[in-house]
Length: 190
Image 1 (spheres, rainbow, N blue to C red):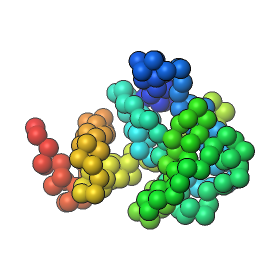
Image 2: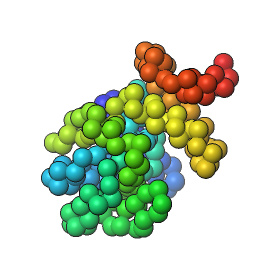
Image 3: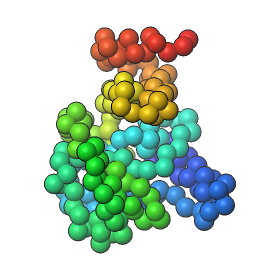
């Protein structure tokens, strides 16, 4: 398991304890989700904050699990329900579930992520192999999200901070940026 992912689970516990709630973490939901998707042979990639945790060593927390699939039709509803997940709604950009211990799970079938799903890397998490978007695809996705004016400003700023962290950890990723992505980085204060 990556150091950043282990730290993320510790941050989960601290978050709930600080709020005076029962101690919990996304770990059970992430394990159950990976098992279900693997057993159902669904190609997927973990994206978002958990992917950042995998690819970074600096602490980063996130409240949900974001998953890219090629189509919503591939989501194994029955198997997820049997594993303790519950569908909470479908929106234009996501299909939302609640997993074990109340962990929110958001599936997306964004066509821009289809190739990234095929290049996802496997990361060991206990007895499962978790499929996580690769570092360069995560960088492109974070920059695409940061440039989306429909997203809340706070989310776009977090996306930029995540992208900057990826570049700082792996400077060679700069070589993979498009001219538009480079221009976005030039706007960041030095």
